[in-house]
Structures are given as C-alpha cells and as structure tokens.
Length: 220
View 1 (tube, rainbow, N blue to C red):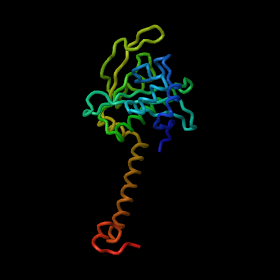
View 2 (view 1 turned 135 degrees about the vertical axis):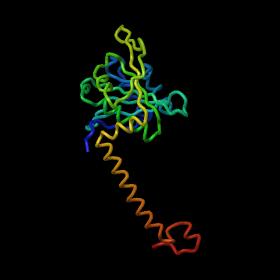
View 3 (view 1 turned 30 degrees about the horizontal axis):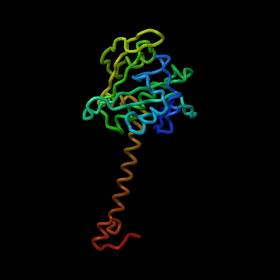
View 4 (view 1 turned 45 degrees about the horizontal axis):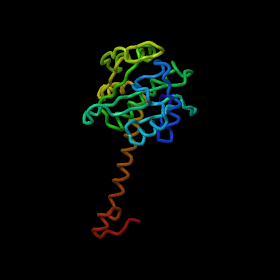
C-alpha cells in the first residue's frame, strides 16, 4: 500500500489560532479553492467551526508538522449535496512535493464517502501552474469555466479556473489507485469477519434481549 505523505486531522474550535496562522493570502500560488480572504481572524474561524458553516482539516506531514489546511462548506441547494473545497499549503518549503495534491484527494475522499456529497468544486488561480498541471489530466476533475479577474494579488487582477468532480467520476478514478482499493478491500474483509462472528453469537438464544424475553437462559 502506498504510504501517504500527509495526514489530515479534523479541526475543532481550539485549532482556530493554528488555522489563522497557516492562512497565507500573499500569494495565489500557495492555495487552491479558498474563496474569501476573511478567514484569518481567530474568533471568526472559531465561530464557523462552532456553527459548522465551515469544516476544516489540518494538513500535516507524517512527522507531525502542520503545513496547511483544507476547508469545505456546503453550497447551493442542500438537497443537491454540493461542496466548495479549498486547500492551502502555507509552508513554501513544502510546495512542489505533492502535499497539496494528496490533501485535496484525501479531503475529497472524506467528503464523498463520509458526508455523502455528490459534487465537489474548487478554484485555482491561473498563475498556479503546478496545481493546474496536476488537475488538467485525463481522469481528473472537469474544468467548468473561467472566473475572470477573480483574484487581486500583488496589485494585479488574475483569472481563476473553476473545477469540479462528481462522485461517480471520483469512484472511477479510485479504481486506478491501489492504496485506496486496498483500504476498501481491508474494510470489506473486516465487515465480513464481524458479520460471521455476530451470526455465531446470536445463534445462541440467550445472547439477545429477544431470546431472554422468550425465556432463554443467559448465555455464559
């Protein structure tokens, strides 16, 4: 199984100061998908975590160094289950090493398979050539459009690219990732092992409340 470079940890209100410190608005190239520039205030971040309007994951290396964060929120019709995703790798020494790509992939996997989203969208600055090179490939997300002069960075206006990926597309893409397939197979094996053990357990009438109610002796 492939060893991932990053670890994601769901952030709580106590992590608001860390998220604020990791926020870097000085360069569009250091992030993908963060749409508003207000998320640098500790109290504001803590409030969004508390009311669950924004969800955060801290991104750290395997050595435990926090190098960025991912944030996501529900957008549009709730019944449509659409999510806007953003990722920042704030430590410039960690750029161009695949940390951002892994953080995006792991967060999308969490959003689809734990929170049952259907569509995940995110934006990238047109100057973010490494991120665009990663995204603009077969099997990756779809380019939905161009947001003209969306960013204002270093005194210049810059276009943004809007990308999205649907859950069925991500499912198909997952088939090409052996580590993810292995994780699913491992989970399936554990579920089957548990199913067999429970079947053996409830075969004894005295092991369930229904059996006891019917007069069975408690299982020893």
